[in-house]
Length: 116
Image 1 (tube, rainbow, N blue to C red):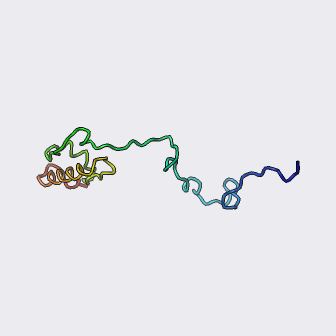
Image 2: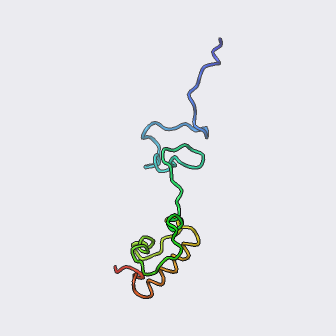
Image 3: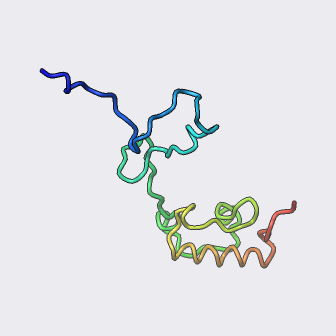
């Protein structure tokens, strides 16, 4: 065997060498640029379940504006209506839910906003 077949340690992808620990790096650059695992195609340890519409599973067609406990689940702490992507409600029920929340606000069952 020849001396040319020695194994070299892997270098950085951009060709630059990494500084020794604590030398020449910007403060806080280590953890800030790292991306969390779990992106598309990765096998992360967390599994996010697909959100299912509460009204479709319980077969609720009409959303009553007088049911304040039900409506408060879909109103944020500051009084805003929580969007579909956070609650998992389907499009048709989100529209009916929005209408019911606005009706409840108009007859003073729900507040428009919180007091500060």
